[in-house]
Length: 437
Ligand code: LLP
Image 1 (cartoon, rainbow, N blue to C red):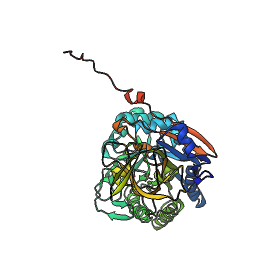
Image 2 (image 1 turned 45 degrees about the vertical axis):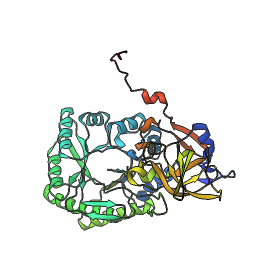
Image 3 (image 1 turned 135 degrees about the vertical axis):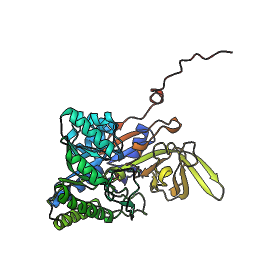
Image 4 (image 1 turned 90 degrees about the vertical axis):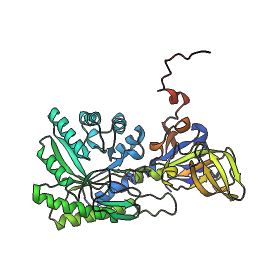
């Protein structure tokens, strides 16, 4: 997919660059991003709204992968940005992202994070709970400014990939409940404040969703409420944000829709609702993370040791694992992979790919057909662009891998590999003198 292909040497090539060359140059594990594919995904979202003449913002959920370079690329493509912490906001600002196109999320923003957001002038703050509502009101009042907010509501729909659970009162740590009066109370409080301006309503129903049903149900529930709120409080939203969560294909078991289809369904439903309640058409905002960067990322590992459990399985170990991709251990996530330096070798066996962390659960892929691999071969694991680097950690004091962007035959290092020195940089040695003897 994307610009990936097999070159004349039988090597995997991405963005016109041989990944074996990249592995040799930058070392492994290495995350490689197909920039053209990210651009294509971004444009597909934007163009679908444009085609239907709908005012919209597509905000990249930077939790999926937040670095200065990706933020710059997102800016270049004209998208907005969703950040959920002071750290993600700092990254965005360092990248020169226009603050007015930043949306600040999170269920427990601290006072200092909110102050940072107000200081730099983010486009809006997505208020999640009563504590935040009060804190933000107080901070905005002190500054004598009016802060644009969205209210995050929990519509009582939970998407588990392709099932939707309709719960009367959803058990979720996020948002104001739409069904028990919380959302009404929050809206009333926000509208009473002269320091807050409610731009609109936000909801997010889940992640790695394959169908459009959940978005349609969420829109229906939200607009029903909006119609009530217009009657009761004269509230008419400028914006309705339906969140992210559009699924991608990790393996053949996954069956996502093209991005445009989710957007078209969302537009159609919003139009239906708007007509039904004779409301003005709001701007539609969405905030995809995974579907913008997920399948654009590939991780390259070096293969090292092997272990055979006779008549049971062959373990083949790589030089990374749950430290650079925690998703298999955390969610039993499945991946596909090839031998990057011998993609088409027909001499296959079935192996299980182990990571190098000291945990039995550190397995990347079970039962993968692969050409007979030896130490020094390179393994390419696909679709690691979202929640890979961003959830990477230093377990076992493994340095975090480097990240390279490739496009039109050129490669650019965008995150350096961590060094051992980096690993101890923040450590403070003991002051207590060690007793001798
Ligand atoms: N908006 C909100 C409010 C969210 O909570 C999320 C994801 C997104 C947007 C972006 O969702 P996406 O389009 O990426 O599905 N670590 C997990 C995924 C956690 C998603 C959390 N929220 C994983 O690796 O699958």
